[in-house]
Length: 98
Length: 371
Image (cartoon, rainbow over all chains, first blue to last red; front, side, top):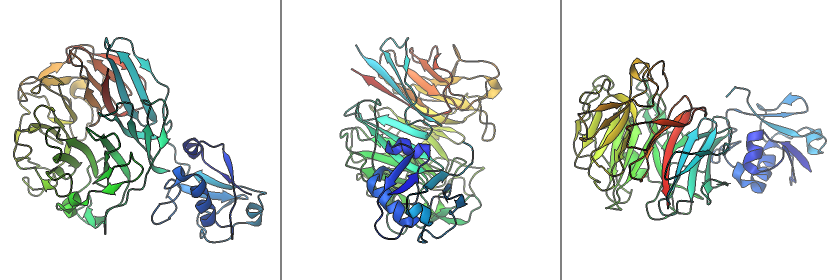
């Protein structure tokens, strides 16, 4: 199982705890992970990436294993620690006050 | 005995304020949909416990929520707002052209007769309709074909903020957009035309009498007089008696005719309310005094309503969707401020008292009168 940590606002929207576990078929990429997340929690569609262009929303970032993956291609394989479930992918709302 | 439910959208959640018909003791809900901007929430006239809410965030985008129990619980529904066809471009602040881009929903207007049908006013300006309780949305794209390339954003963005359904003619509907103007459909939303004749924007437009481009802030109608509309424009308070074919100014003796909101008394179609704001840069009431102005003559002759309202050191704003009336007798009038106060009058505006003082900045106020 792959672990995804969501920002609190999206946890409340999806009515889940901070971390969710997902089964991903095929390569473990951000794109595949978000596909699986949105299938399981359809209310999250449009909140992390645009529903039409699939572009990451501007104030969303992806962290894992102490690294910022936000600027990586979303079709790149995620680190092995994420693919194996040892480390979560963290979906983060950019630090911008509010 | 009747009840009143006031639906308040704020920068950090929605609040539901309830009272019996006496309107003296109010219960204030916990924050609903907390932490998000609630631009607007409104109940269905056909089923008052069916509410729709626009929940939005610069981080996480647009969510539409639906309640079937008057705001006690909510469920997210559809949030896919896609412009029909190639969206084209509109005018930017500097006069250049920019592609249409969806940002948020400013207004949700449930059908007068069908709880499953609801209209949504978007930024960038467009009108969407759902016929399945908000699960899916389709644009009524004929609206944007009315010289949409000449529309431009106001300070708040290029927003469709007002949707008024004609209670007599179900095919007729009005929308208002900042900064584009007022538009009318007579065929249920398929085709539209601009109805801005008489509006003058001397400082804001190269052609003061342009067909589109006017910064209309809010319009209001009394259901018994569907051809009479009142408008708070960027500057000027306006009136039409022929469903928008021609407008004339009714600012009269107002201390300033800049403002955002306007409302009509629920039983007196010629009694209207506004909250004058000092200017387009000083977004607070003149002289530090929070005054609602009432006209009992359909405009031109205005009286300041001050009893119970702060009359010194008051520098907040009242946004365009933040004033509403109930259907009780005497008519109740309600408005919310950017300072987080919701004021109410249970005597048609003669006197006022705060229902609640310290909410987040108020974006919208709607009122339901319940049996």
